[in-house]
Length: 177
Image (cartoon, rainbow, N blue to C red; front, side):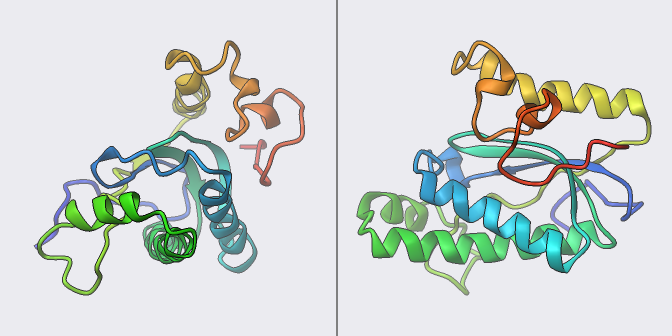
């Protein structure tokens, strides 16, 4: 039985998705863990025709607008690969407290691993119009501003707001939609 009512009905269209760290733990406070996310996306861009239209990475979750031939599968690949790399990094850097928390909050049915990095699901929302795309991009880019982290969206390092402001971003973003 599926665990979510959210469905990807048109795989090659842009979708707005959210990926949340298990129990909202502040995992992305280190540049190394954010780099794992960005590297995972770069791999998918090269290997899976994964197109990113917008993103923001905050300390405990990320928002993403992306498309691919099989976005559901590619998001599953992203979460699986990035989780493995993040756990490896945390073990190497002896981040015992974070590992303990990822183990403690792991869901009971997750018997194949010792830790759970990501909450289940992505809550994909199909973006069928330019208006919906603009609304979600604005929401993504304003997220760090609303939290009081920065005064303007393009000052947040881990966001596509820089790309849309004409500045160099950290990852390729498709702005022609």
